[in-house]
Length: 522
Image (cartoon, rainbow, N blue to C red; front, top):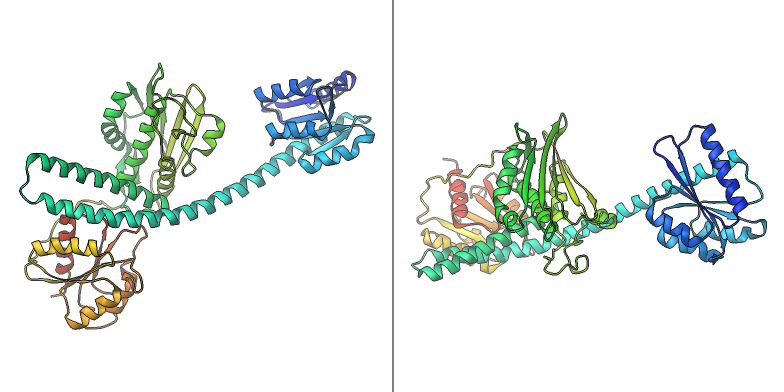
C-alpha cells in the first residue's frame, strides 16, 4: 500500500512519450494532493527499465507490452524472469485486451486501457496491485516454510538414524581405546592412541550435533553468565583467530548477563559463528571481529560482526538451510577456501530454538556479516540443572552378576571387558527376548540394556521386568545412542535408575552401575 513512509517507487516502461508524460503527471498530482511520498521513473525501452530495476528495488511497474526492443507476451516474460515478485500492471490498447489477459494469467496483477487515465482510479489500481502482490508473496512464502518444515522433519529422522549408528560405532572404538591405554605402552604408541581418543571425542561432538539438529536435545540447563560462555569460546578459538590475523573488539561485557542454558550447546553455537567469521575474513585487508552484548527485560542479544566478504541476499536467505554452505565448491570458488558441510548453522539454529531463542543474519556483500543470537533470560518449562559431574558411590563390584543386553555384539563385548576388569560376572543377551530367558534362568544383580533393538526393545524389556515381583527388584541402567528423552518413571519399573548416552567412558559406566546398585532398598 502507498504510504507516507517509506517512499513508494513506481517504474513506468512506455515508449509513447505523450502517454508516459500523462501517467507521470497524474501520479505526481495525486501524490502531492494526498501528501504521499512517491518516486516515479519513466523509460521508453525495456532494456533501460530492466537495468534500472536491477539496481533499484521498485514497488510497482506499469508496463507496455509493445516496445521498440520487445513486443508481445515475451515482454512480460522477460520482466518476470528477473523480477518475479514485482507488482506489474499491463498498459494495453483496446485491441490488445487478449494479450493483457494472457499476462494476467502469467502473473501480472492488473491491466489499464491507455485511452482511459483517470488519476484517482490510476492510484487505486496501483495500490491494489501492490497489496495483491504482497498477499501472493505471503502465501508463497508460507508454502515454502511448510515445505521446508517437512524437509526438516524428514532430514531430522534421517540424521537421528545416522547419529544412532555412529554413536554405536563410537562407543565400540572409545571403549576399546580406553581399555588399550590401561596397558603398558611405548610413548609413541601411547601418543597414537591419544590421538585416536581425541578423534573419537570430536566425532562424538559432531554426532551429538546431528542429534541436536534432529530433535530437542536432552542436555541439562543451568544458570549461565553469557560473558563467561563467550570468553571460554574465544579461548577455544584462539588459534583460529590468530592464524587468520583477526583483531577482536568486545562491547557490553562490563556487567553480568545471565540466561538459562546448556553450556555445551551455547559454546557450540558461539564457536561455529566465530569460526565462520574467521573464514569469511580470510584474505581481506581489514579483519576485525566485533562481539557486542546487550540486554533488555526480555533477555540478551549477542551480535557477532565481521569485516569479511559478506553474502548476497539469496545466500543470506538460505544460510540456515541444511546442507547449504557458502564454503562449498558450489558457492565458494576462492582458492584455498575451506569447504563446509552446510549443517553447522542449521544445527545452531535448532539449538537456539531449543533455548527459546533465535539466530538472525544481516550481510552486505563486500563489507561483512552480522549474526545475532537472542536468548531469553529464563526458560519456562526447563528446570535449571547444575549438571555437575557425578560422584562415584563406593559400592563393591567384585562378584556382582550383571546382564548386558545389546543387539550390537561389539558394544556388549566392550562393556563386558570393563566389567571383567572390575571382577564382575557377565552374561550377554542380544535381544529383549533373550534377556528375559536369561533372567528366568538366573536373576542378575543388575541389568544394562540398550534402548533401541529389533523385536522387543529396551522399553518392552523394562516393562516386562517391572510387571513381575521377582524381576522388579533388579536395578536397570539404560544405554542409548538415540536423542529422544526417556521417561524413566513411565516405564513401570521401580528400579530403572539412569541413562547412559553412547559413547561413554569407563568411569561413567562404573558411576552408573554403582549408583544403580546403591538404589536397591535395604
